[in-house]
Length: 519
Image (cartoon, rainbow, N blue to C red; front, side, top):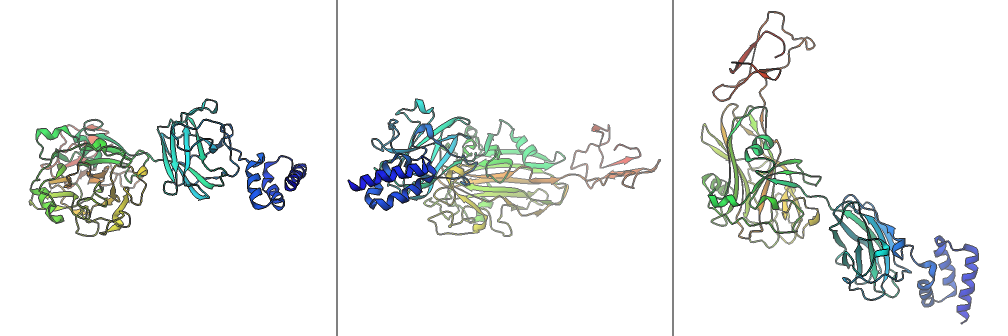
């Protein structure tokens, strides 16, 4: 009784000095703790009104900053000490029990999906319960939009099906009688996946090659052919070729084309959120494909799923290279072909004059072909023992180094964006290239793909010399004539000379004589 009287006198004295300013609550606590023993102080600390957190009720919810990514540059420190039951009904979907001690937060969604996470937690119970509400405080009842639980093992959850621009409330609930939990909160934004348009929608197959993949000032590509499996009529039921756009994601290429062993509409991320279709068309392959497979060590299975895109081209310059990225859903621990030749990418180039062929899909600076087993990082693909050129492996999304929610593509792992080795070609000579992605796994979900950076397949542009002008000091004098041309043979190219964007009638030869301005 004496201590209670002393406590009341202490409170009266402290209110006289400090008033009701909650900023000095720790100073007040110091004075009270001198009067009460430890057990009594803990009880009073929970029950005295001015120790309650500011966001102890929905109407006083604290704003939670929305981070533009998942790096959590902005965090909010939270203290449950003194929290009381707010009086709002416990959500039907929560297992927290009756009258939980709760704290309230509000945020305005900037995306249809955010990641809510905790860190630096202390004195946390076995489970901290949460609920998401999409209505104003006055309308909140026992029906929540989403319920979730946070534990030492589960420190983040996905808030999905959100409407950008809409305000939401998060309610954190503790089942403890006198919670003293402290922790940091973060609300991150899931980056968008890439966008994919199957062939025949935004671009035809021919346009994907001529307008997206190839860079050239002339029409130097012909005989374009796209094929799934053996190319039989039944294979037309699936579309495994398309256009992609980065769409603000973390993908290394802005745009390009993608070849997949599965249906291309399932290529966008994030990882593991849905099905991947079903491409049932398996094939033994042709000579070019089997030459490429043998180059990597041979087949682990007699048949495979394969998508190939091939075309003829005539380069204007003397070298050729392109940029690509290989990905596979077999980049996981436990796959039948973990660390084996279960999937590969080949770029088979054939000189149509000599008939010789070679695979351009090699690890940079080596003669090692690109395959599932040749690029592997066991530090990122956890639980696996093999390791091969790990510097060329990018991310693993199934229990690996990266959050599957952040995956721009729905593949378990992928290489970094790479550049093929530059190969010497003869300008004016016709070549054939076959781009193919193959996988041998029997699991229909274990698809693979190869992405090509737009216009990285550079065939060159005809150069006819520098402009001749007075400013440049090399203008023609009146009556002079110059012959323009490039080392191109008319039999290999369709040549058309133009002036001011208009065709010069009859000027289709390898050279053009000029004696007037404007050309």
